Length: 247
Image (cartoon, rainbow, N blue to C red; front, side, top):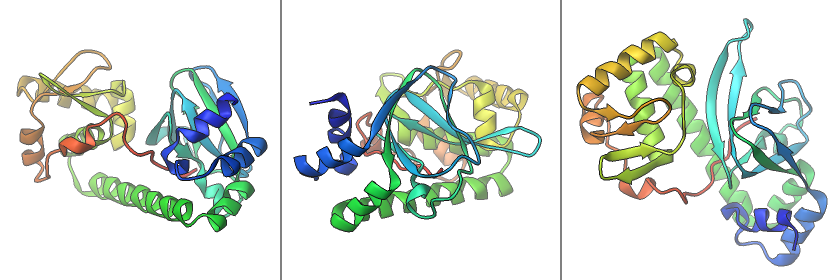
């Protein structure tokens, strides 16, 4: 069996497909390796493929008219992205760029669309994941409009803990490595402001860690400070279900 087959088989979205269905997807797909800091696709490119990240880490961003970056999401191995190709087939709106060396499987949108028609499980899974993505976007937009820089950063840290957290003796460590600038791009703030707020949270004993390595030492206290439920332990699991990102 080829590597593409195993990448597809190990994606939980396709785990209920039989070998023949997987082989049909594999036959129409192709894989490509990308170095770190390399675009997978650019805004305005034709949206005719859906992507499965087989290895690595990528970020989905929106570029403003003055070329500033607003990070929408991160994608880890086993996750799909670029799924809007299933619905309109027009051009891309986002920039997707690797954060580390990555391998991507490119699946023709037409083939995946046919699979959705054949498999109710796949169609339902995609529908649920798109709904979850929309919910997260709406929540982040609400935070951006109505919350202070400190509260936006706290909400972000708690969200990242649910998606990328690993329980440790010291608290919850984020598996994803983010710079202060990347955190700022996620909450619509500046690097300087994020540095100041993180310093305040460290002084309060709520977070710890060094450069690109964040540990949330008191998640319950942080959640209480913004009137939010603390991250649920079952979601702090590296083998979570894949998330579909728009693009």
